Image 1: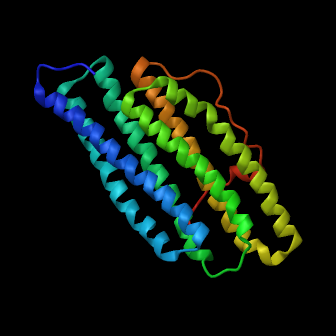
Image 2: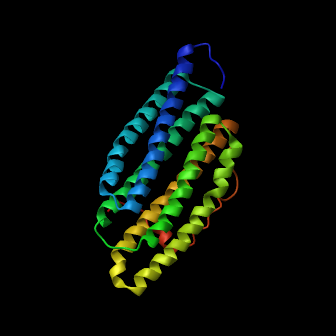
Length: 238
């Protein structure tokens, strides 16, 4: 990034980068702990995830305000303008990732006392492991302005979609075999959809990195493999 005559300008940009880094760390932890809470059926850990979302929201709001003020005061051009706009975009995606992790945690609280085979939950865990990997890699790519690494994350999004399709069919089978599974499996379907959406937001960040560095966004369709009818359902909290 270029050095500026006005030192405070560099300080403003660096503070935005640090705030994005802090948001990324919180979001990563929320996704990991939401998954752990689901696997262990740990309501206490799930509540911690729900509470952590407040901090993430506050930082996102602060980044947005500071970015708008920076644009108004400095009237940045070229890379400086793209960096400020990118901070707004990335913070918005990280805030949504936190919301989705919180939604998973709320589902954990709702099903914590329901009996279920652990094998069913492991499918969601595998999806989440992939999403966590994408999130870590895209945050590293953002910090280093690495468009190649960002494009790799962009290309990998289809893996999570394919897993979601497989898990969707498996959970439908469980529900058809025994109506007593319907409630729990429905909650798991929403958990899986939230994880799939986390993958989508990491792809958004990857596209923002491309825009930040080059001024252009990736062309062509995303590598989506989500063919389930359930994909049209908006994931929500319990």
